[in-house]
Length: 102
Image 1 (cartoon, helix red, strand yellow):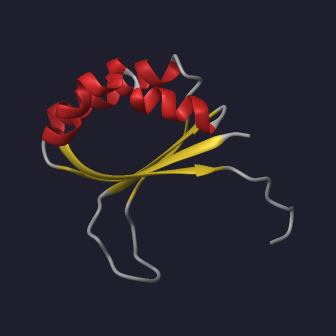
Image 2 (cartoon, rainbow, N blue to C red):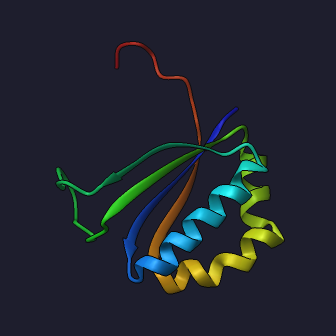
Image 3 (tube, one colour):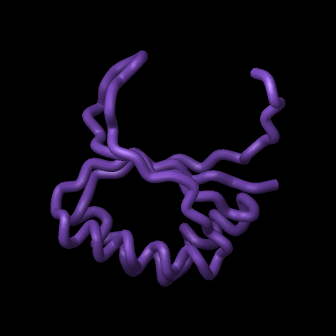
């Protein structure tokens, strides 16, 4: 079953964030990661606005692959870059098929 990693991001250092983003895409590809969406925060429709600037959605073939990516030594090596370049709230979800009509 596919898994999704959704990250709400506030960039604090553009150069470091771009370096982190490029490296995590390369590392993620080794675990079957595919970028699904990346978008800028336009409007809060409901709930508290936490002030994040963008959201990133990445799909992995399975939760095991997502966890292997996140726990990999390669990814752990760039975590300081992530923390220096941004504030992120990252959540993993198991994807489920959505019926044609909600």
